[in-house]
Image 1 (cartoon, rainbow, N blue to C red):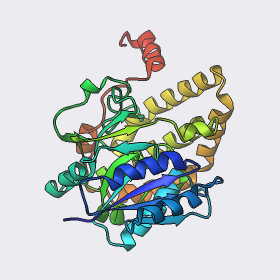
Image 2: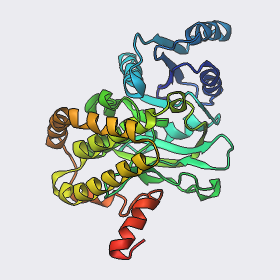
Image 3: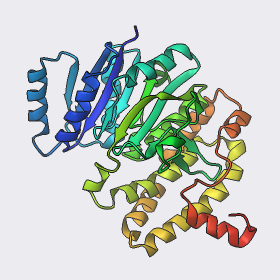
Image 4: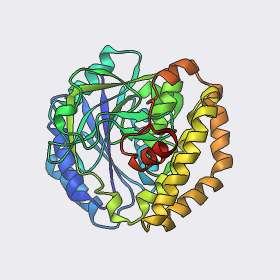
Length: 339
């Protein structure tokens, strides 16, 4: 039986994190340990976690106290490093504000055990009401925009068959450790938002596939972390989506993807300004420009090591605008008549 470490990253949210760990301790898959990373919480989270571990008498929880808040990407990378040092076969991530069904880990591991071409696997991530889909994996559009599959759709819309997808949300995923060792973990420059799509894209470019299974189910309080800091999500969105596209889209596809992306990005920026979110959006745009030299260096390294054809990458991209981009659809209709 392969060993699985699940990283749970906490920042000032001990109540949710303890509930998350309870669901992991109750998993039917018994070769599971928890790597609990506290991302420099300013509350009493660490003290509560030490008491929790003592009360549970659990040797299956590794507590790491980060000395800085390095965001989702940096915090998860701390967990990746420990999991690799401890030679776990698989490394999972579960958002601290999510809970997993008791058979969830077993279902995810089964996919990796039976599909050697697969480097990452996800399942059905529902909202806490259990009726609405948060994610069933990620897609990346030919417009250079990523989005969760079936988000906001009723639970019944979740695919009932196992299948390949573009990628997996970083809040509910299991990775093959050998893949992380080969392509690296999260990109620290992302801090939070789209670092998971970036990792999925790099996995695909390196020849690792992503799969979805309907047999793994978890429940998520969407936005529980980002809502603590106003403007954080907007800032990181406008900072990160240019990096995501520029780093990963192969050159033979970039000439068609980039013009669409630049149009979409400008319209999204204008929309953010109109809706009163202009300050964090413009700060994010400016930061993306400052990071451009670093982004292009990373692109050079990634593109040099591609192990799949451009045709394959083209085949796994979403062919249209993301479903939630209603404003872009209206804009496109003015000029093309296509909604």
